[in-house]
Amino acid sequence: MDFDTKKVGILSLQGAFSKHQKMLINLGATVELIRYPEQLDSCDGLIIPGGESTTMSKIIAEMGFYEKLVNFTGAIFGTCAGAILLSSDAQDPQVCCLARVPLVIQRNAYGRQVDSFTAPVSLAFDAAPFKAVFIRAPRLAELADGVEVLGIFDSQPVLVQYRNNLVSTFHPELTEDVRIHRYFLNMIKSSK
Amino acid sequence: MEKGTFEVKVGLAEMLKGGVIMDVTTPEQAKIAEDAGAVAVMALERIPADIRAAGGIARMSNVKVIKAIQAAVTIPVMAKCRIGHFAEAQILEALGVDFIDESEVLTPADEEHHIWKHAFKVPFVCGCRDLGEALRRIGEGAALIRTKGEAGTGNIVEAVRHMRMVQSEIRKLTTLHDEELMAEAKKLGAPFELVQKIAKTGKLPVPNFAAGGIATPADAALMMQLGAESVFVGSGIFKSEDPAKRARAIVLATTYYDNPDKLAEISADLGEAMKGLDLAEIPESERLAQRGW
Image 1 (cartoon, each protein chain N blue to C red):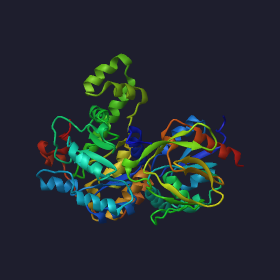
Image 2 (tube, each protein chain N blue to C red):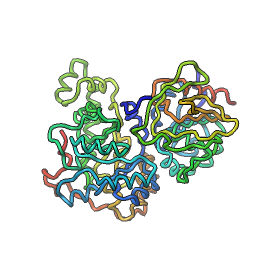
Image 3 (cartoon, rainbow over the protein chains, first blue to last red):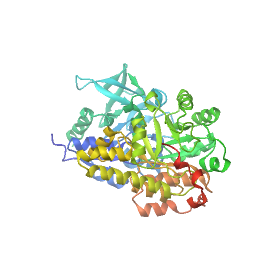
Image 4 (cartoon, each protein chain N blue to C red):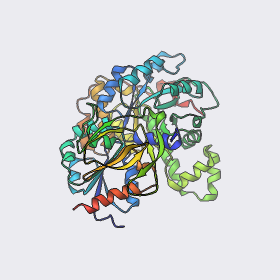
């Protein structure tokens, strides 16, 4: 598949950005690690990786990323901390929500690290379940109308799409399974 | 649903990359660290510089201190146990600490064995001076490796030595032929399977962070440029004149470690760094990095 005509940025302020980079390169995408706001201008899509949402929030504010991310016209995929940043309400004043997806998210909803886990997620776009890694994961507490559920674990949404934003509370970049990244690259490809 | 697997343990270490883990001794300090953008805090009764000054036996922190710090912040909370002291580790796991540092900063409880870390659900970080030590710890189940450096000195020289040693030994492995790996594993005192793996991939199977002597944004940038994937800052922040400012500056320096203009801007107006200690002033027997086997 040819994904190399579009450029995908990975917000690399902190967190698991190199794992996403490896995944996208394996899929043949053109990748750029983003540490300065102006780099976003040449990107068709963006991944906001897992890490600490409070840390990323500080650097986003400090470096003038906020407006650029809110108004970014390409597709954005947020995993874990990235999901928290894309939400409209993280129930925590320390986090600067970009409000690109109308949902309420709860940080560390499953407990501390000893409660982190792997579990199969059922996908709306593929029959085989996805072996998902949840690390101090958040929970999607409320979804507004129009948010489409693409992945379910334990009867709860863990992978959702809203317009050109994809949100997962788990870490597909920590596995060898490329299906969700491929789905995201197709989102970028099919947008103008 | 599976908990406590090696994959899940290393997963948290991956999330800490590109960040700063700060030593704190009170809920107030923990809050300062979180507000400055720390990715995690290390809950301690005393920071290493004070442990060094106090002498005596250094043990796991008071449970009350750890609980108060856990209640104060939303980021991961780490805590230290003594080398080989698996009962301290069991208590820390029961407290729900997010990461345990089996640390040479505390007085060792076992002079031959480290903790069998695979037996725990909570991930462990361990210090190393060279690749052999790193691989022995990974063999025992460590999900994250850091340099030992020389804690509590504000002196980066040992962390640099340890990071350079690990990196150059990894590079060497990648140049060896298959039949040379067993002899090299023997020389390193490292598990053969891990030696084979590194010869192939050219990197450790878990993240590799820097610790021990980081006191300035420039120190953090130096360690990141030498190949560290994150930094631990112990005494460097709360022994300095303006901890909040310095903490924030080290956070930014860890992200923008390769941009000298940005580093110059970050480093301006930070107040006094911690005073620091020349290694020559520390007798061989009091050097913390010697602990661990």
